[in-house]
Length: 114
Length: 113
Image 1 (spheres, rainbow over the protein chains, first blue to last red):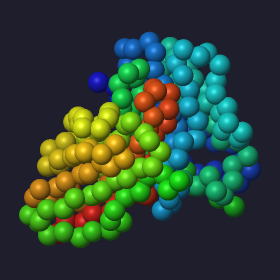
Image 2 (cartoon, each protein chain N blue to C red):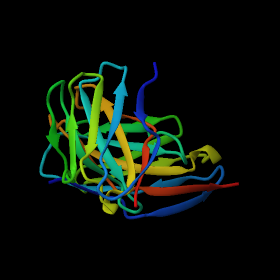
Image 3 (cartoon, one colour):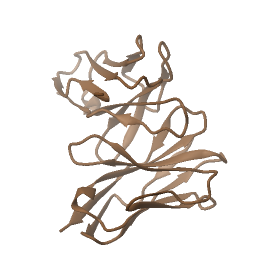
């Protein structure tokens, strides 16, 4: 079974600074998909960014980017120019090809301080 | 589009009572999921469905049942609630392709006394 580990239960960052959230996973598969989701306080979870394992280029979405290290099975999320609205719980998720379901990490609570 | 909606938003049950949580999506998604979220434990998959009329067990299925009679609805039932089932329950849906993300509902906060 796949496992996803987020080793930082809580993190904080000053507004406008950069922060990196870590995620590692365990799998024997060669092709799969990785996701970062954001769950703001009292709001619905939404997708932040996704990465396909067969693509070597790291995904980017505006201020959000990933550092995907396939050999190390690492998938970290970098948030640049942090904003107060980035305060949320962030979940890393792994999805095997044709699995139909994802495995989520335990989450990292990020607080952006003014 | 309303996206993914969940009914009810809050519920308090006594031990042994039963209830059904309703999840509805209007995005014509094939896949639907039920998760529970407990403090410090992230999201754990209870049951999921890959299409109308199909269901499958996730990692924590005991004490729950599900049904997917219509494509847009996914019901989660608790036959005899226990305090250990106190949690926040999230429903999600997605398109069939692997690279598609899940869309989540707002959650149902359930307390079992």
